[in-house]
Length: 293
Image (tube, rainbow, N blue to C red; front, side, top):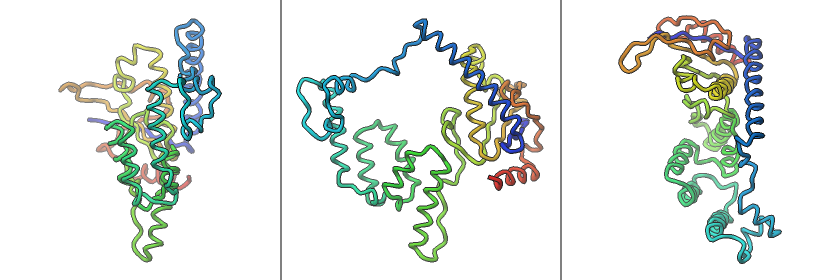
């Protein structure tokens, strides 16, 4: 399988970046105008702007949101289902009332796990456990709160580094602990939104892969893919490596591939990679870009 790869650097390819951003911003603007017209014609409803029944009842009954969870509920206002939901929230509040933000995961991990188990699906519980298993037990609840609330990978890593540094100081001359967050993350275009990384890899930029055959038949989906591609390349703080394959094995058959329209839109020059590897010179360029951050 042959790969052709190009590099996108924020500093040395700023003109390309501005061109791509302007193009995708224009596509996004046109899409917003189209949706506005559809909404005016009643083709798209504005359900997202409607208040929930519970919120409407709170406002109509002139209730205080905080009092709902700390005082007896008024009669004949909420349905049984709403009362059950409120009571579950009250149970969670009571469970953490005596907790301190200075406590650490070593003391509260099991309690937090039980609350997650009582309120979420098994899939969500599994996801939570996968996320928390690499966090240091010395992490305080205050640090955990900050870690969960931020979408920045830089901020998350900084929090972990601070905890490990504190733990090393308490242990004396022991060797520094390794940050468990120092690893390669594999995610979808959608999942990358709001995150960032020093180096980002975007493979598979071929017609039929991205965009898919189905997407190519829909202008709206193409615009969405263009936006996602823009989001993905701008996650890179230092360098973004984008690549496509000239041939792939699809359903057991070697197929010649066509470079994605999105890769072509970058205006970057793709080059054949020897043994599908990054050269020493390219590695040096990337390291320089990282050092300049």
